[in-house]
Each structure stands twice: as C-alpha cells, then as structure tokens.
Image (cartoon, rainbow, N blue to C red; front, side, top):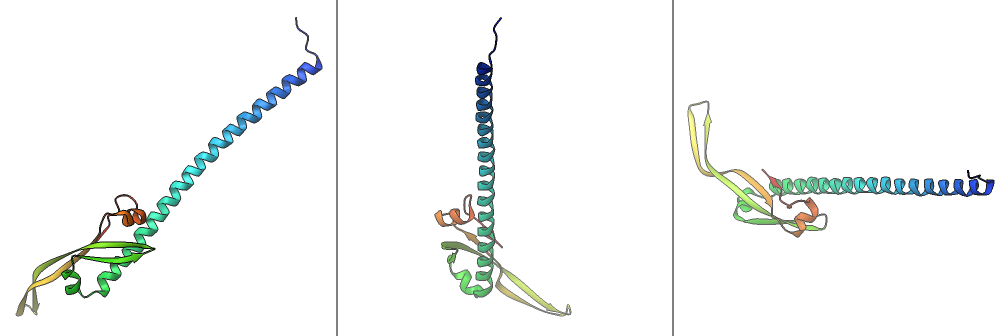
Length: 139
C-alpha cells in the first residue's frame, strides 16, 4: 500500500488545477470562435440588406426622375451606389391603352409604355454590394 505524503498530494492537486485551467481555456476559445462566426455572418447579412435598400431607392429614383421614353430608348443605365457603379438593364412593355369617359367616348392610344423594369447586371460591383449573384429587379 502506498502512502501519500503531503508533497505528492500537493503535486497531484496542482496537476488537476492545471488540467482544469487548460480545459476551460479550450472551452472559452471554442465559444468565442462560435460567437465570432455568428457576428461575422450577421454583419455580412446586414451589409447586403443595406446594399439592397440603397440600390432599390436608387433604382426607384431613376424610374421617377427619368422621362419614360428616354429611359426606354436606352438599353442600360448606370448609377453610383455607395462607391459601386451599378448598371441596370431597362425593360419596357408597350401596349395599346384605351381611355374612355362615361362609357360613351373612348379613344385608343397605340403603343404606350405601360411598364418599366430595371434589373442590375451581374458583375463584381453588384456582387460586392448586393451579395449572391448581384442581380436585383425592380418593377
């Protein structure tokens, strides 16, 4: 039977404390790495959402401020959004429009612009600002 002296008991206790400290350090490191990954993902998602909102506002402003016939004659339009130059494809739909007053008098206007949509072109600028493939469409 082995007798434990006070010095060997102290050494054993110091080894246990060292092992516990090492284990808790490893657990804290794993926890902080997980929190860092979650925070990084959240910040990236927030940045992309801001990019979408700013791009949507810029596209809407382009639609409202440009004359429709001029906008529809151009195949694409470019704007600066947060340091990124975004190019939009312009798609216009033309239809006949019938205007009637009190169901008696009516007049048909041929080939009127009834819908305009803008769509971002997939390139490095749009991918950096919007994330994913960088394509966003506004009707």
